Amino acid sequence: MTKTQWQTLLQQGTVLLDGATGSNLMKLGMPRGVCTEAWVAEHPEAILELQRAYVKAGSQIVYAPTFSANRHSLARHGLQDQVRELNRRLVQISKEVEGALVAGDMTTTGVPMEPLGTMGYNELFDIYAEQAQALAEAGADLMVVETMLGVDETAVALEAIGSVCELPVLCTVSIQADGGLYFGGSCFEAARTLQELGASAVGINCSLGPEQLCSIVRNLRELIHIPLIVKPNAGMPTISDTGDAIYPMDPHSFAQHMSKLIQVGADIVGGCCGTSPAYIAALKAVLKNSPSHK
Image (cartoon, rainbow, N blue to C red; front, side, top):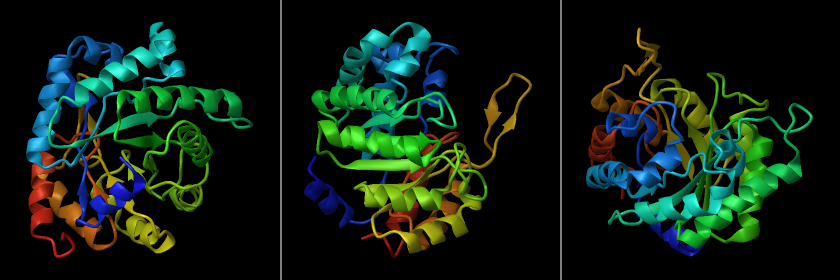
């Protein structure tokens, strides 16, 4: 997908992403504690079922299940030498789903960059460039760098992707209630910086529910001129006796809150933790009746 094609898609109206992946895969049989990427590669029917349900619900873009398929994260499972193989396989599986673009999905290593932590620039750049190369070779239509914890690591990811391909790159950070990032800085600083570095869209995902984001989204919209992404959780969870996160917001309530965020500036929307195809279907219905949806 060229950046011109990306602009053409945006001109058609609000873009609808998918919802949560990991929690829904567990409902489809994925055990706890396994490497998600390796399990999906061995059980493709689960992600195919889920992503086909998202497309049926209205998703125009689905995220390939490559979230943590980078060298650093795969090393926890002894799979650090399978970056190219796993990313290529997982993108190919998602591309079997008809009717949506496939985003190569990347995320944080979870280790802060120097001087806050031990991750050096060169090491992080190589980690992201290696995964991005594999995703591009596999035929990803665009790239997503999501659930990021700091602006510096996101900037390195954006630079690394740009060194291996010219695909559109969407960047979203995970925030605290005041808009702060977990590795320092804020989503406002991140949005400005990533826009200047050439991101095709920026925004926020995970952490909070849509009911907490109105002022943050409004302020972000005033700061940037590129598309704004909002992909929140289904409210703030409680933890059950079995250790499961229980998200309180049903699909209808989620969609109603998301409608308000679209009104104040969100251009690209979807769901994160606690959401499912039912949430995307409800959001699609809201978009259909929204004055901002062309």
